[in-house]
Image 1: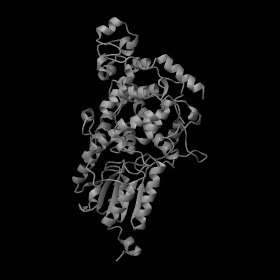
Image 2: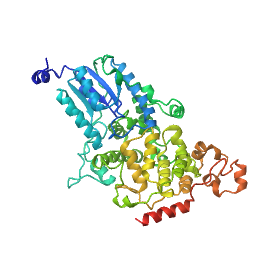
Image 3: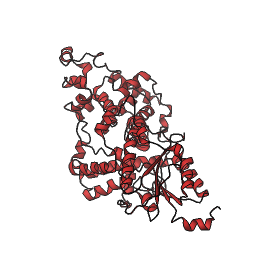
Image 4: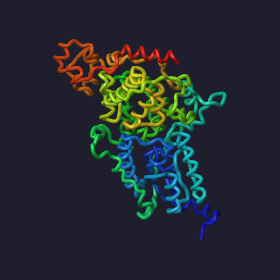
Length: 486
């Protein structure tokens, strides 16, 4: 006999509660988990939805990271007597099916940002409520609800500085601790057996391109917290200078932990307040957290961010369509050492220093005059910290096409950038080893070096190292000409 609404409403508190993990793969500071865990048996689930066309796909590097992050979350839950159910397929189909099979009284999740994701959540909520299962949603992946920070006219901010100043007048909720006394509901093997996901399948097989990832990263919540603690202890004081030195460990390297939700932005905010947020290092690092928040805020209010130029004047930009130049850039074979170093670091480790990201981004969109969306797509597939909002926001910033962006006519000179931020050439030598015996100007601009210096360094342009695919001055002039033609 079907359960009556009166009967089911009174029994929701005893029926299992499903926690749907998404980009929040942690136990501490997890509002959805905390609410669900109020005395009810829990079912913890992750759904890899590769079949809903409207959603952005999970890139290859992020899949590798996801493998480790899911394994870590499962291990944490198992140490508390539970487990993590991992599924693959349409979330719109699987969540209602799971709730029906398990007679769940509620499903808990964190709000998502993009309108396509929110629309999917609305459809899932409707399906769940039709089978008398309540949905409870919280803000758990941002500092504040994006509708909270408004201009005096009630609109949303389009300048990061103004947004950040306004956000800091609000109270950011304190991060929640690790939940206690969790109880769990077993999910029989007979439930959705053909939709079970083995996260080991997320790792590359042949060729195994993730060897450099494994020696560089260890996903997981505890590791993310350790990164945060080490940064605050050892590096944050020097952050104003160290963050731009590409050969140094001057950044926090927290980005993949934030992207997967192993660390929450509220945890970082609280740690910085405790550390002393008004000294230069923490203050500047906090502003970088503000930029991340602004990117997610912009994605919420301007969902076209990943797909269109936010600055309308660039709708007529005549980008070049050069598959050869794009491929050379992707492979780190442009013949410009600092650009190639950044792109090879990305390929080998799934990460690139932020200053190098700006250099390679400017080179692609300005010197090569290739659409920023090509760079965004490549980064989305190769970064372990790929974040839908941040990635698009940063590419629109460097290309000059965003609502707040560096002017298009600001074109980084790769040589000057290398001389300033890799003055000893250590970064180039590490990632472009065929140039390691060069020094001085020859290392930064081998195409301008004397033949004797190249010969002594074992470099043959066009053979052991490519000639530049574009003359830096000609590329700059071409970009400025295209900009003036808008």
